[in-house]
Image (tube, rainbow, N blue to C red; front, top):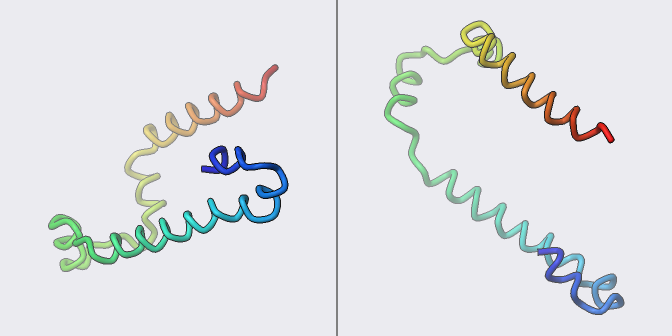
Length: 87
């Protein structure tokens, strides 16, 4: 979106053109919020919520249940980020 407006003459882009993508993002934010508020939870989540089985600290529960998966994902992400810093 910014690239599209960057095609404007420099004076117009600097005076008002750079603001338009931010306005579009505000509209997308409102649309996303409306969709999130209108969508229903899955039946599985409803059952967990009604049974009162929600985890108090979901991050710790995930670390306890899936330590290897989380470590692998962290390592892969760290490797990708680290390799991009090597010249």
